[in-house]
Length: 202
Image 1: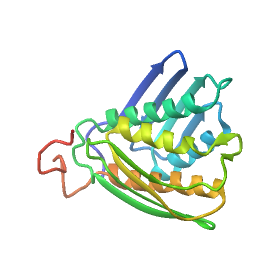
Image 2: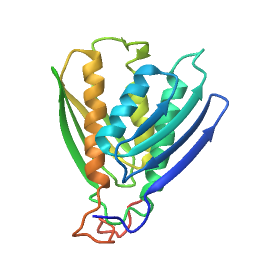
Image 3: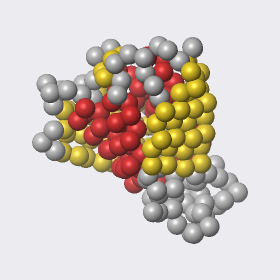
Image 4: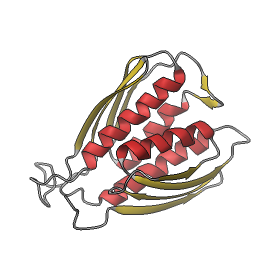
């Protein structure tokens, strides 16, 4: 189904800690042009783009001489803001998405609702404090920032898994597949907002 309008957005965020510019297209092919200065985060965001079929172009410069926290969190903020802007009034979307994704021994489950009421439930234990040079605790910070700024209720659960790389990748791919389902146009819904309230805001 072709949408009647371009579901695209462009966001710039400049602070004393980070400078980030992002462009997204919800109806893309999963193309990714991403540089954050954090190699593993780039890898995860490429997976997010590919499996959500959302085109993402993003450049981030942050205070990585301190640590990766500000950059990771602010990338989540900007991507969340871009998703929210591209969805506009959220007309004609499926709204809900759910995916269970295996990655070797790891199995991650994501359920989300583009509700306008941001919330994060994160039940993902990691067995190591880092994957590559990245602190594993920062994945929760990314998804919290993303959920808060996009207006999405997001539940992420690790069913099982031990390898930190596999666990993180399964989470990002599960989020991507759930997001793809939720933003997809619903032919039966037409131009209506998928809510009994008539709006999808807090």
